[in-house]
Length: 115
Image 1 (tube, one colour):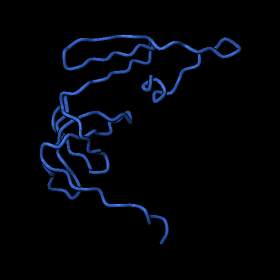
Image 2: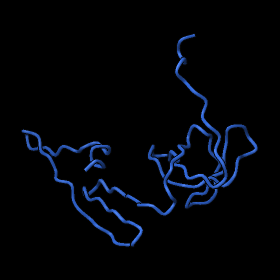
Image 3: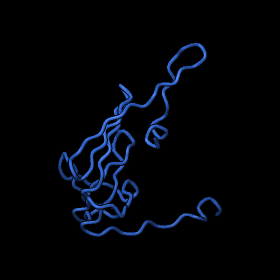
Image 4: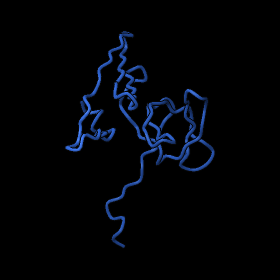
């Protein structure tokens, strides 16, 4: 079988590990592992809504601290809001691009976050 020759099993997570969780919108949000679940390959994680159970494939282990920089991107008005540990908030706008016909070109999120 050649379809999964380079696939590797995901390493197990420990209580207190900082992870990113894939949200319903497809974005990765930072959270913390509370405990392994009774179901195989599942973990209980703490979100701002409460505690939820997620499969290991929906969790990405990170080396970040829980109190590191939080970034929110608001694409409606093309402004990006950044906050850091000191509580200072900075806001800047991403310039709009226009096509030759004058229509606004909306950049994909991944391009906006690189700025």
